[in-house]
Image 1: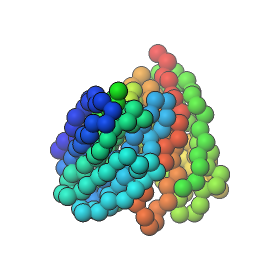
Image 2 (image 1 turned 180 degrees about the horizontal axis):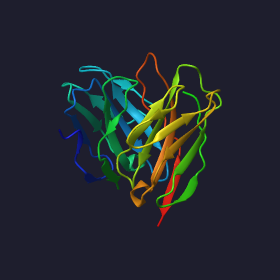
Image 3 (image 1 turned 180 degrees about the vertical axis):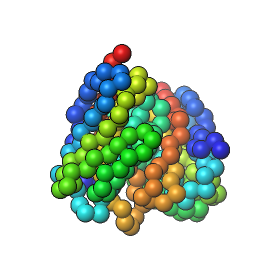
Image 4 (image 1 turned 90 degrees about the vertical axis):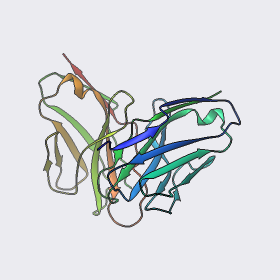
Length: 112
Length: 112
């Protein structure tokens, strides 16, 4: 039981490049979330999903897209990376809304 | 979700109980109080949550005042590994599926 895993762990992009971050969970959770954390700040919600095939916007969705084609995977895409997207990205999942969220180890992204 | 207020930092001696306060004076009757912690830029870790009764698990105890306007997280025998940022979060229990709202939390430093 690996819990929540994220790929890759580190990445450096040039401005304008695109990439996809992968989140996978093996706990059969319905809900999945993408957050970003900037230095010295708390986490902010980017997008979330309440089940396979569904996605919704969070607090800071601009510049990101997501997909949940399989229940266990939640993908976060950056179509045209900008330096403002330099951050640590965390994925999380939960069984239901009121249950605790389990977080992945994070992806550290730098956009130059 | 109700706003929560926490002290920015606290110290505690190893082996002693660490008591972390949280103010949530505008909390509504259907909002739970959740505690998470983040150790050195790892993904946040769930600790405990409660609605109005005190709660205890293997990690900590949560004491919620009778008027629910404040709460205290208690780590009974703090160790150096408990050094982390602790987040107190008030979260609506019904409808919707938005993520957790993280503030800046309390940086707890356990002193040897």
